[in-house]
Length: 180
Image: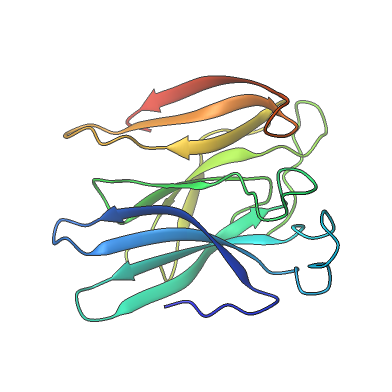
């Protein structure tokens, strides 16, 4: 599985079971925390998403995407999150304020600011490689916390869209698409 250290601190995000009953998981990792761990609010400027899948005999664990930066100072491990598709272990949806493949900041053409966007990821090799497609882009607010409810025969993707300063100060709507 995943072995962390002071520079690779993991945070659980989502878990599902494939048709054989084997788990597949998503988690975030703060990769810049060792130097800032003792000073709350100084880390979380480089978060990554990882994917793990158990094939019945062994775990396959791979980096999945750049998760961008923390949501706000003081909660350095908080990312935009990942939603695994409960019907298809080869699909996932992420919220990130970085290009999922390169880590480059996502700067909106709408307002020139960095925002979290939603991406659909697809893998065919137990998460070793991912193809990313934007669901949202050039937003003027953040798109956070995607979720895919279990809905046999269909896929719905829901997320929060709006402003999020912290757990007590936010203004968001629940939005979604069917069969994204």
